[in-house]
Image 1: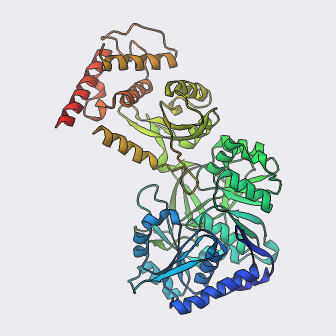
Image 2 (image 1 turned 120 degrees about the vertical axis):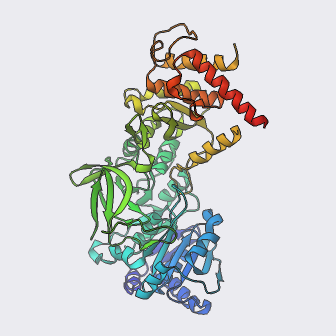
Image 3 (image 1 turned 135 degrees about the vertical axis):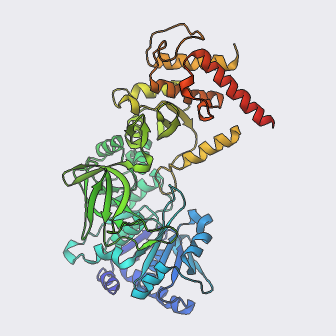
Length: 463
Length: 91
């Protein structure tokens, strides 16, 4: 990992971070990293130990993360929103210490735990002396799983960039450090000599204000956020002419949102990213700015399609889960669970296999139906899923958050009329319900498992 | 007319109108598929809407969809299912 300080040093007095509290140059950032390395000695944090880091993306938390990697530790970044899970995750990880960075990074406090037994996967990292990273999955399909990744393998993509390939962009840090997308954004900025701009809240207004004020060039975000941006119309109030590239990932992009956002920002290039906690982030190339088709690649990355589902093999893959069996087959392939279409070298993600709705033997992808409904007036958010049916196996149900109150019956009539001609009959929602609470979770994507909670609550109420 | 019957009639009429099916007098011996022209998806929708309106789904509680053909049979299975729910609640 010696290349890290060398690379950071070459950026000298360029600005590494801008946040609410001011700016930090690369030189100052390296000083912070060195301060942390000295503090580790005082705190008796030794190489090979797991250290949890609680806090948003700030110069201080980023410096701590880099210092942990240089010290040969395994970092466990945690966001404050998941605090109810922290004690369980700390125990699972066998964390030796937890360091909390307060907002703005001006204050920090650390707790050192008594020696605990470490997990075999952490020991495996320890024997090679490699730094690691533990990321917990969002748990949309059950219990959150702790993925153990090797930091050198994850950073190989940026390590191998030579000076001529660096793209030092001013980029907004949108996703948090407990997410593979947030980690990837931070590392891509830092090791390319770019500027990371962090913001307190991720509302469309704050994001637009930050883009305008700091002349942001790159916005890594989610389809859900882009949809919120379009619906709010707030982007019209700001000068966003600095924006060059918007990358989006973590969930399928509705065709209506992609078309709308390309129309609203004709000078911006829209690029789909693809990554998974278990495998890291891949190099992708979109067919066109307004296309959902992309190529997935990178050194040593192999893809194959098995029965319509994407499988990937990559040297950056995690070592395994802390609390679940290995998901890799004997050949090292990982089933992503994403159903895809193929066109030559390009693929298009249709949706998660687990979210496919089966109506009388016909497959329905929620993203396609949501895209059609999202075009309608008065629709703020929509979540489409399947509901068990004694007649057709499942039927399509659309849960809608409205902008203005509207009678459910009238909305159903409008929705069905709108979908006719756009969708095949079996894809048209047969049940429409109106909801007052947003479906958008703290990772700014739709929280699909919220449905299970509602259905459970309804059946409990009935009982 | 009791609540179950009126709710079933309203939902049947709602689905008929949305699909532009010809208007037909609703009788207890009217067959939902043959007489009213409902497709399997319409029947699936009918059951889902009745669950929303009445709070019960008899077909998830052991009643076979194959045994219910007419409007009168619909009245009966939903009336029975509601009565069963009320009994369970009392215990």
